[in-house]
Image 1: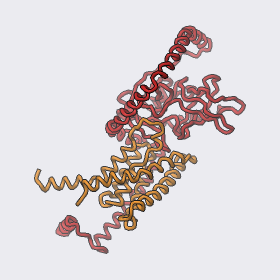
Image 2 (image 1 turned 90 degrees about the vertical axis):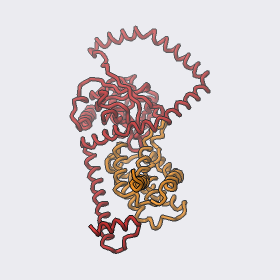
Image 3 (image 1 turned 180 degrees about the vertical axis):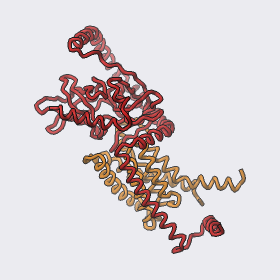
Image 4 (image 1 turned 135 degrees about the vertical axis):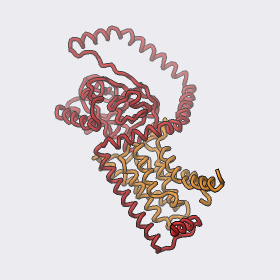
Length: 315
Length: 171
């Protein structure tokens, strides 16, 4: 007891502990032991995380719930500045934009006149093909809370979670097209794996020809279109939409446009403007029930199995 | 509240500044800046904070605290859990061990050491992520991110130095 008090008094006075003393030795060895333990714990956590243990996913979701309001509050001035900048830009180019919008309105009016006829034709063709009606989904609008994007992981935190009916695997879209998929769900936040992430694999088709392929993220600005037969011609600018195969995403969501066609790779540029991503819509397309009913940790494995199956089917 | 308690609380708060600023730096990296490609090249603010405090006040930035900050960042950013914790731990441990050769030297020297640390960090992270994801990743985005981190050290250090001078004298 006396020794402890003396040590405490010495510490308060800021007097250094003698070099080579027993206390100093104990302190050094404790420190070294603690470092070794932390290194081992970090290694173990990396391994546990790789097998997608639900506990790490819950921890991530819980922490995101806790800090989302703070991050959102700090991000608010940046959003305000961006809006101000947009408004300033719009004022500067308002005449040009106005003319552009007038042309767009005219073009849409013409398209609108054709719409009833096209809808009717589509309904009749679908009836002949026995394809059924398009699946309709329930939408939840959410704000982008935090940008957890980085060079190796491309993801976002959005401000809607299980309390708002969000589930893993749901499609996340905005006005431009497909943004990504929900991979982690907290009470009031969810993590979105962007279509450009290296782990993202989306069954797609070319909108014009219906040719099926698999769109893979690269962590870069563009995605790679895989499993396209070599004798098929794909031209730059072609629209890529989701094919709906696999039952996770609905059919027909626009994803990107073919950017370049090389000898070894077809690269696709996403339609989403990442710099303007403030609001997203999370869509629950109740297609097969697979996503909602899947037990924890099985979604990615299930997707992997289906992907492997598709690879085998792809000519 | 009596004066000794007030003083003790005040001292405790001041002593927690390095950890608190490192946590703030970690959160700053998550701010959603609506600018194209910002997120991919956003500097590693946490590394700057941990480096500066490891040089100036290692007594107030324990390695266990650095480890927890790394875990916190891994959890929030969706990175492999434990990776940033391990890397921050090793980086802080290295700087604190070599502090005798770094502390008190000129600012360009501090910057140079940080540059070397950043290069090693970037290489190790790229290697680790390539192994974990099972393919060789494009290091371009990481190179931009860490170039920005290196370039931002003087600004970050100036801010942290202001914190040190204003609130951490005699603690």
